[in-house]
Image 1 (tube, rainbow, N blue to C red):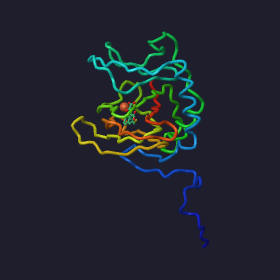
Image 2: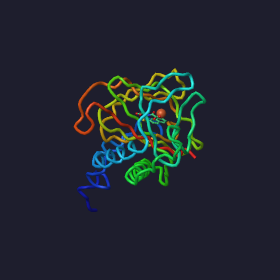
Image 3: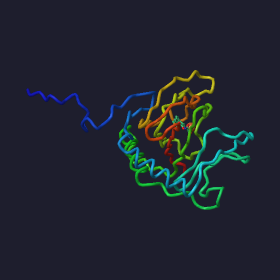
Image 4: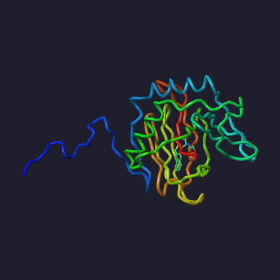
Length: 220
Ligand code: MD3
Ligand code: FE
């Protein structure tokens, strides 16, 4: 009988973050995106040079407080006609910017660590929050295949994420998501109601008074 001193450590060494279960099918990979943050943010800036931040209008006529843009084969769009994935940016009629390799790699790595090998996102919605910006409780159900997870990456100021149940009225749990945290939402969590509490003010070393969230989706 031999013992290995390192039997209790994660198999990929200390660089591999802890896998923190959040709910059935949902896991937090704390800090997984930290080392890549500068590259990811430079890639966001390159996207913004091609397709600017905008505040979309809900079908009910309200302006969203979150500023958004997309990259990938299709992008999530909201307007008076409803919600949908569209291959072109309505502001310029051109295809959305390509999904950067840095984005794609992080999303597939995170999904694989959470048990979703072979996740190939075709859309990335990029959300920008300023102090006071919130996202009310909603479900993500504009995608065709709910068996694929959604991967979210938090950058900049921390947020309180609201994670509810299958009914809007279910009391949400509050989860703090900080710079570099990655969450994979699959299985029964995929259609849970969720939102973001109004962003608290702060000053982040890389992003100042902003939070940026990337959500990777298989829309088609
Ligand atoms: C749980 N974004 O873009 S990311 C969204 O922080 C969205 O910007 C929030 O909700 C943000 O739709 C939350 C976490 C997230 C994303 C999608 C989910 C959680 C989810 C889909 C199903 C369940
Ligand atoms: Fe959502």
